[in-house]
Image (cartoon, rainbow, N blue to C red; front, side, top):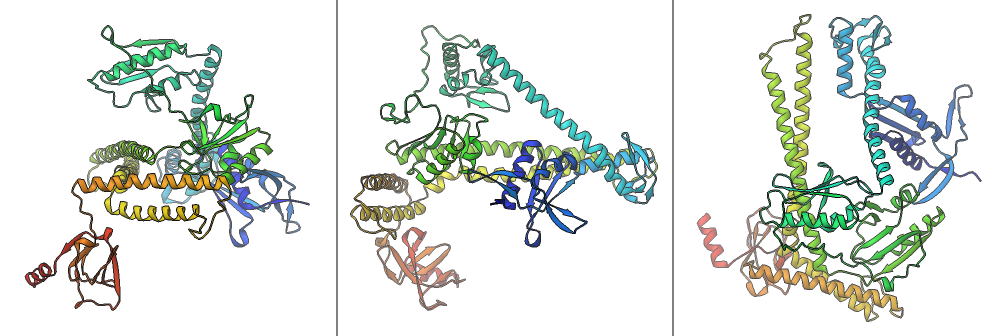
Length: 625
């Protein structure tokens, strides 16, 4: 029986092939709708020519149009795609793939300049029919001027830029291969330099991929900087305490102990100074209880509550990447393994683990699953890590916003500088020797203004993200939000206690005759209680800092309560809320006498922002009138 692959999955495979064949080029791959649902449209800007892209799309056509019979004829192409981690082979349900290359403003501007030079400074925007001419070794046919400009862009400018892009991309790749070859031949770095200066802080240069320096440096608190192409200690520039120098000496000694050649360009330490030891890594598992076979050499799917779900022991090119990506795994350079997002501090997703294991085994991999729910961390530790990561994000985004704002200002300044050389209202003098320079300056002004706008938008975007990250802790520990969160957690705790007692909760029940079910419910109960204890401490600290937390003891019937910018008369004081006149209203003060709606609403105490007695409110209203 013939198996078919629908257009959606063919489009996904086409994106993958285009990305692999033309790295760095952004393609838009769109599937048609309605009567065109069996067609795919591919568009891109500059980059490779249409023939090169058509060569990639050709094997994905399932049919072709036969003009003689005026019908679609099968191509007999067979395609293998990955669907949710499983490989499926069949005929693509695609009647055709349309390809279209667009050209950027820069390419068209260069093409116009070449056209103008070929036609003695004429302006192509003036239109008109022109004769054939040779540009860049290509014969431009006689046709309308705009068509000739597009021909030059297609045959001369875009190919030249694409060749330059390929050459630029090839050089770093060859250099990286050379470094890897040197590393594999020598087995270590040719020489690592550790330095500590007031201007640069602690830096380590000369490491190569796979030389074993990375884990040593990370253990001593160093991070890798792609921009500076070196390892560095954060906030070590201008350090006056001497801690940075101690770290540099300790890292140098640890690198030497690892068998690496190190040159330490460091100031001497006083005699007898003890070097700090690398912090011991927190254990993530108990090897004595790990069920991993001794001789196992395949892929390990490991889950702990502290570390989340990881896929370890994979290697580049072994075919596991596509399968793991299909099951929502992502690669982490810090961990050196694949991880499942949002899996930390949660029970193992056994369904996903089984599905990944099955897909990997079908692809020829040996797989072992190990689940350790007992390895966990406290909620306070998890929250502290989240706050630390938010602070790091804020710092990173602030830096990006600052650089983008600087680039925006520089671009606008450059545009103003160029414009200052053109008198106000000066028209382009057609045929004058200044025409080409005038047009070039106008194009440069426009390009810089566009860049200034784009960089300004980037700066605004990153500033917003930096602000959100910086306010993370404040929002998480806001007393009103914390009180609402505590209500939800206490309800969850009561539900877990009901499930452990054999009763139904959350709309379902659990079979507590199974020990593993009781163990999981017990763990969830302990984790929820731990989280409640953490947030109660936050509330206690807020009260100690002078934050007012309202309760029924603060109100009596007839008082006025402020909530969300409006005052309401208190009709009844309840255990967890206040009854007030209901409905939306534009009045700043809503009382029993001025209410516009007949029903009542309730305001929970965590939504209260102020209180006023009836007498004080009457005096305030009298003064306002």
